[in-house]
Length: 199
Image (cartoon, rainbow, N blue to C red; front, side, top):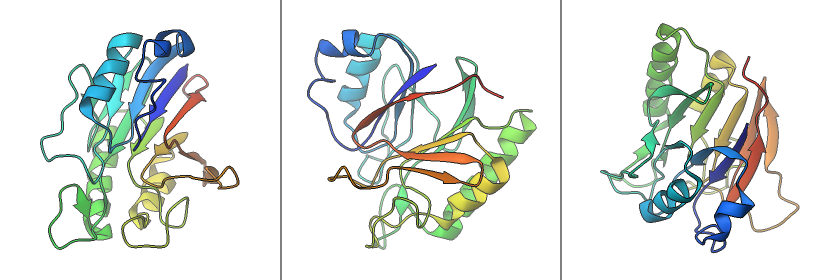
């Protein structure tokens, strides 16, 4: 199954009728945060496939995408794939929506692992806004990754982790990294990923 993953920046040709022809073979849309809800709603309406999303650090507290499914702190099965997500970024202000300390994110990750295991399913696809610490992250506090995601990936062993948050401006920047058994992919601003059949 092919996944169209989107993050952080509106892509004009995707926000147009051309999206139907260009991505006709996509079976799932993933939103990795910091995108207008109208953009995601347009894409899901045009492609008529499930949308799983998490919020970014710039999204409102009550961020909702009509026609989409929030997987922030949750897991669900979509088109045969077990999908889970954790939105937000490292805390870089005393008070900020969708901002967490590493300890807070570790607690969220532990709860998510527990609920997925209680549901009897290992996560296939893990969606986040921020990357793991030291993997595709930035040098500043705003774009630092989470150490907690190393724990989630090592323990939960998802096959894929898709994230945004870090804006890639050069073709030489690494955007795909193997972390333990997980393929970690920075999808900014969009990427098509071909997922093999789940385990």
